[in-house]
Image (tube, one colour):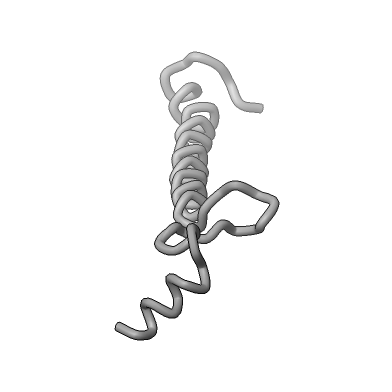
Length: 70
């Protein structure tokens, strides 16, 4: 318990608050992790759409007679 009291006395009002990534950037580490998680998921969704688009252009459209690939 002594360590927690010392830390509380040292940090003052910042005790128990989450640290920011940079002092000049008001984003916490948890918010940064969430941003990376969402952008990674979005990138994979975009890759999936790109594959479906390519398959449609290359195989599905010509097979159904929508257009010809030269």
